[in-house]
Image 1 (tube, rainbow, N blue to C red):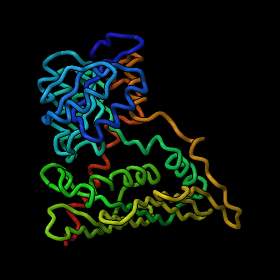
Image 2: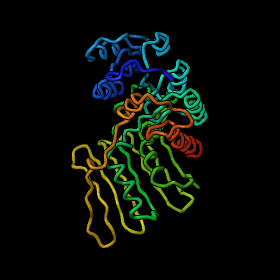
Image 3: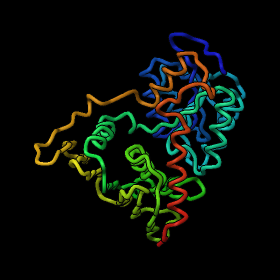
Length: 334
C-alpha cells in the first residue's frame, strides 16, 4: 500500500483529465483540504486552465504515465473518456497508487474484474464516482422501496440536451466509450440495481443512432427481473431540458422523484390511502465519492480482501457494466 505523506493535508492527489469533469473533482478535492500536487492532460490549454485555478501550482504532465513515473502522488482521480479508464487505472495500480475513477468505471466486465482483483491484491483503493449514491433523493428511494415492497413496476426517465452539448466531443465516438446509455443511463441503472437485488431474466431494448451518429443518443429499455418486477427505462439524449424521474409502484404504495432543471424537486412516498410523505433529500445525504475516497485513504488502512467494501468500491460498479454490455448486445439498433 502507498504510505500517505501527511496526516492533515494528505493524500497527495493527481488529477488525470483537466476538462469539465476534472474541474468538478478539483473543487471537491480542495473542499476536503487535500493537496493537488500534479495534473495531466494532452491539451496544453486545459492544463494551464486547471493549474491557474489551484491554490498552489501543481506539476504538469501530458500523460498519466509521466505523472505516475514522477512518483509524486499517493492517489489519482481519472476524469478521462470512458474508453481510457481501464488502461489508465491499470497503470496507476501498477505504480501502487490509489484510484478514484469517474463512472461508469470501465467499458467491459472483464477489464473491471481484472482491475478489482489487482487492487485487492495490492491493498489499494479503487473507487468509482457514482455521485448519485450520496444524494438524498436516491437514498430516500432505497428506503421507500423497502416500505412499499414488494415492487412490481418501475418507470425511469433520463432526458437532457446531451447530444447538443457533446456533439463535438469524445462522447459521440464509440471507440472512446461514448453513447448516452453508457454516459448518462449508467447512473439510473446503478440506482435501479440497489433497489432490486435479483437477477435480470429478460432484456428488450431499442437503441437509436440518429443522423448517422455512431453511438446511441436515444434508448428504450425494458427489463424483467427474476422475481417479476418490470422496469421501463426511457433515455432521450437530444431533449430540450434536463429531466430525471424514478417512479416506483409496489404492493404497499408508490414512491418517486422528479428532478427538472427549472422547477422544485419532487420526492415522495404515498402509502395506500395516503397521505403522501414528502421526502427531504438533506436528511439522507452521505459522503460524496471524493470525500469518502479521501477519508478512506486518511485512515491509513489497507484495501485488501479482508477489508469491508466501501460504498464506492469498484466491485459494486461491475454489475452496471455487465448490464450495459448485455443491453448493447441484445438491443435492436436503429
